[in-house]
Image 1 (cartoon, one colour):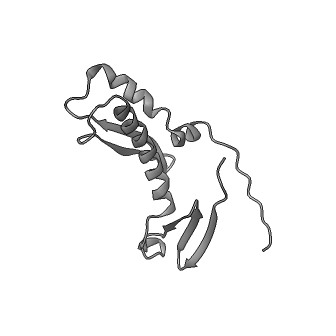
Image 2: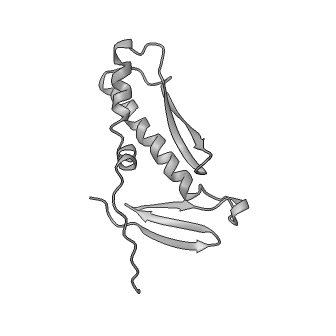
Length: 133
């Protein structure tokens, strides 16, 4: 179960989140009134999907003693112009030369276990409430 996340507003368009002893800082780009001093919240959403996929890829290789020095993942985004939003995420696993051919489908399947991806495909319900301090 996740702990509570406390969001605070240190000034301007900056928004900080305190979670598990970390402070995650965000800001808006200059063209949206921010100072671009940190990633925007939506950027963190995108990065969470890419890094979640990455942890499954690197763990897959580590469990099989496959070298990871030349291993990396890139994520590209195809827009849905009609809906003015993201239409598709393309996760590309860049395998090292010595990666065994027999594991290609399995490493792709491992990415499908990414919790961020799973929650996007079957989203939870949202409830927004107010309370006074």
